[in-house]
Amino acid sequence: MPDMLDHVQEQQLATLARQIAGARYQVVALSAFVCEDCNTPIPEPRRIALPGVQCCVACQQIREAHNRHYRPGR
Image (tube, rainbow, N blue to C red):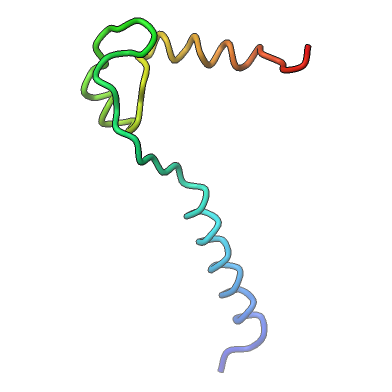
């Protein structure tokens, strides 16, 4: 017969499963065939690996570097 700890553990596992499902990256956009920034073709493996991708690797690195150093309000 399950005791109180078994019930609590089941609840924790269910909560964790819901949190993981909610945190997963869910893209509904289509991947671009050419980069938005430099108009070079985006390779098919990149489009498959990252659904919804809009930039080539080089331009994405530039965007991420800019976002890392950008501080709004300064």
